[in-house]
Image (tube, rainbow, N blue to C red; front, top):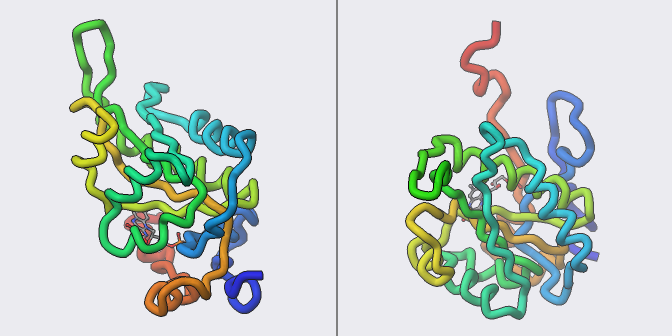
Length: 201
Ligand SMILES: Cc1cc2nc3c(=O)[nH]c(=O)nc-3n(C[C@H](O)[C@H](O)[C@H](O)COP(=O)(O)O)c2cc1C
């Protein structure tokens, strides 16, 4: 059993009742480096992203899905920045979340979609919740070399990698470096709701 589940609850300490899946979701860095996600479950997790809402149902989200052990996984992992490389290689799957910035309305006209990045975020949010429901965990990553990755995967100028999602099975946090372990078990905090509500009459 992992250090986290033995000694630390990572459940959100909410000020209002939430559905359990939202309370239980958190972003670990300690994954089981031997775990393999079965293909049916992986499809289910991706299907959740597919069914997220999007502006005018334009569906700008695309995904590069790389299973651990594959060359594509290595490519994504090598282009992570800073300390992300030190932990993300234990995830079972790395997913590059791509936004198509413009919609191909006709064969030769691109119309800008100002909500493309927003919609990718929403699709990933759905994916994270479905993953949690499947007993998996996710950790979103903004620290990566997007230009290098875009080139490596042959993306067009219209396709931008917004984030990477690490998907995997919770592992033993005691294998993390002391610095990462400290982050792994630090209390999860949020700004008070009153600070978020610019207007609430
Ligand atoms: C867009 C985005 C980018 C992020 N980038 C990184 C990152 O590069 N490295 C990392 O370790 N965590 C990253 N995170 C994870 C956040 O730090 C984490 O979600 C936040 O601290 C809240 O923790 P929780 O998800 O456990 O509630 C990112 C999260 C998001 C949504």
